[in-house]
Image (cartoon, rainbow, N blue to C red; front, side, top):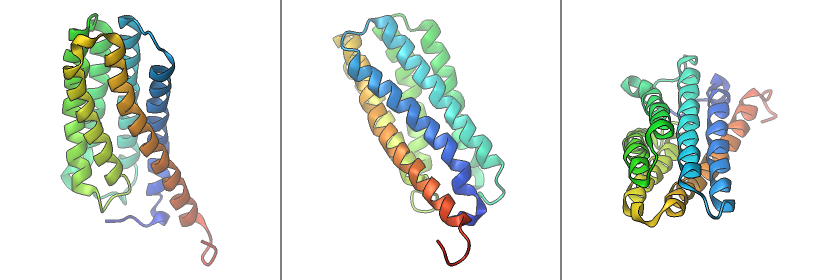
Length: 196
């Protein structure tokens, strides 16, 4: 189902992909430069990351719904499902995660379930949809981050922040590259015949 650039699908995917990349890269930068974060900083950082990642996924879903050329069959609503999960997880993390165990319970559970969902979607469409490979990478990295949170729960706030930040680096870079590729494909599709 590799969509033709002239269908506008690349343009529709660009903004949500760029938004997700920027959210991830901002969190990654905060985790790198904030050397001694308190638990409160970690909770707010991870909670906002989940919330904004969910918003980007819901925006992606709205863009997919608005393009008649997208044919993902029954999987069409999957980005919305993990987007809502990220939003709910972000809110629960901000409201209820006041300890390392609470952060792992809320954020780790959401990252694990959402990551598995995105990984399954990516594997299904890895060669037939413009974001298939990026979904696969993001899903795998998110599942690894959830596992990492469980493993470092006793090491303190900095370790928890570092695990989520490391995943955010990978997701941010891959999605930024994907956004730039989508922009290029969109411009190629808009170019007059013979100039692309």
